[in-house]
Length: 102
Image (cartoon, rainbow, N blue to C red; front, side):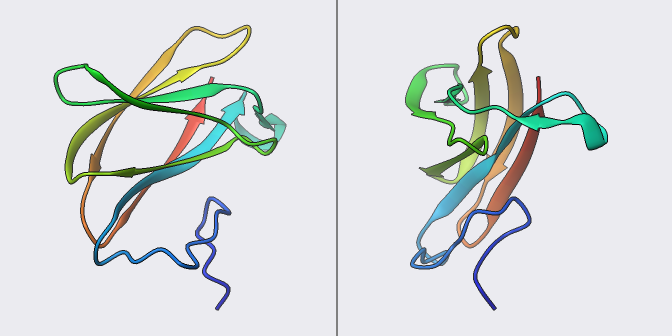
């Protein structure tokens, strides 16, 4: 087993017993026509809407956060697209996997 998840990011070296992971991919469009969005930014907001962290997407549109357990909002900011918010729940021992279409 290579440690990759459905979204394509490897979990090698990640101890899920001690980490709550939020990760995914930002895509422009849907279905077979969807294209990965590199150079977008993904923000992690806590349950009160306060900014916690921000990461750029990779060339393949992927991102990852190590978060505390609980409810979060993932906000995607990309060129030529309105900001997109997605609610997610992070838990120790699991990976919250998102596919965000803009």
